[in-house]
Image 1 (cartoon, rainbow, N blue to C red):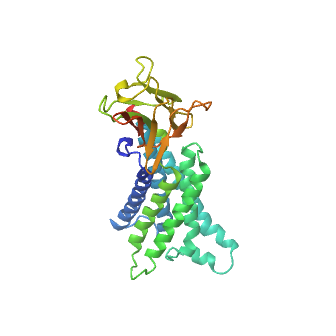
Image 2: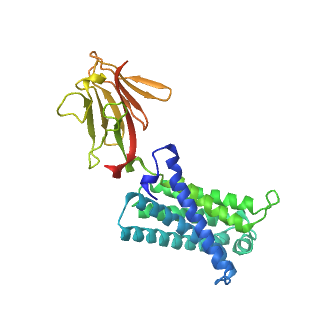
Image 3: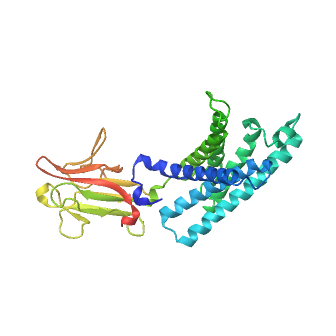
Length: 333
């Protein structure tokens, strides 16, 4: 994972999903290789717990490793956090698998005990509880390593992702349209489980990006300045043609007043443009135009929230300057 390779678009929310889905596939490939190359080294009744524990460990560790790569944490810290997540996921998955297959059936009626303990029985009905607990273990591992940040979301996301993966596994392995391939069904289980776990629990946060103003008009074309302070504290940047004290100077010949517009970021990371001049000041975005020229009858200047790609037009006609608001990786500061 590299923050420079994840542009600030809506598609960035799929980056961690695809990353974790890849780790789910790697877990399936590892277990399959150990099973087919040289034969399994464990009893048949261990196939289920080993597969679920390996997928839980890989997916939880992959999510933590992806975050640490994006945040550029030290290598030893990345390895330690990743190993801790994998260990928690494995331990909890094996523990809860034993609880589901050995203890829970004792209090249920009928032949549930024999069916749940039968390792050769491939049925979502008897494996749903194991998937539920494996998903919970995945969320527990990620939430614990992240110091219980959004802990409920991690648990709920892990359970949801594992159950969705189980549903896909069941459909592909239950003679769906003539397809009965438990190997590919297990691959789909890992891919689906990892994809939705990464999508739900830890999408790439806006805190890894910072807002910038870039000049698009011919004068000073390409000049850009960051909005937040280097320590990520709230900041307001001023644009105008006053020769001293402003953050971005543009010439008066382009219709820019002494102090024309400002762009600010608050403590929550929200970016806003404020009109400071009586001259035309317009924010343009898809299907929307916002007039920010200063109204003397108001106690404060007008402002509007900015999104990446918004254009700010200062002046009008032949005398106008155009700015663009961009979200770029914070490391560029």
